[in-house]
Amino acid sequence: MKEELELIESVLAGNKQAYAHIINQYKNQLYALVLRMTKNPQTAQDFVQEIFIKVYQQLGKYDKKGSFSSWLYRVAINYCMDEFRKKSYQMKQVEIEDEQVINHNNPEIVFFKKEKSRQLEKLIAMLPEDERLIILLRFVNELSYQEISDLLTISISDVRNKLHRAKKKMRMTVKQGGYFYELCEG
Image (cartoon, rainbow, N blue to C red; front, side, top):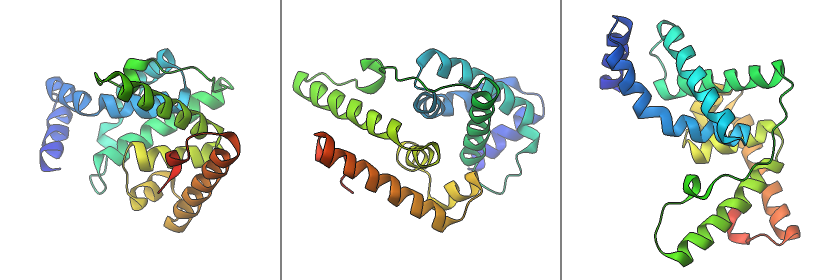
């Protein structure tokens, strides 16, 4: 956290190289979040570039009270939601390329993990937008309930309730649709 704050201060002082370090640190996590929101690799890449530009322009607004990653995700989510509203963007079902999901060598492991990942992506895509977003923030980006609450400006109990509802819906879909049940355990 201290190193992150020093990088931010350095960027604000005009050091563009320091911003490259911030980009490198967060680009993969941010891309994963945006890809799951847009379901389109090209759109996700475009959005991530625009988000990093927006973050650079708004870096002075970061209040340093919460974690930088939460603030970054808030900017990213707001950007995506604005784009969806502006363009009446409809999320499309696009298969995510295998390399983006798995990078192991054992053929059996690759097959089962890809299949599990595809099924999980489909389950998540079926959820309402607010529940899908909470699932992604909690399990993909590993944010705490408090961070999600702050990010989405909802109470922690709402975060827990929506997460519970989303997992319950996913379990029901798994039971009814022949998906691997172990996808939603936990």
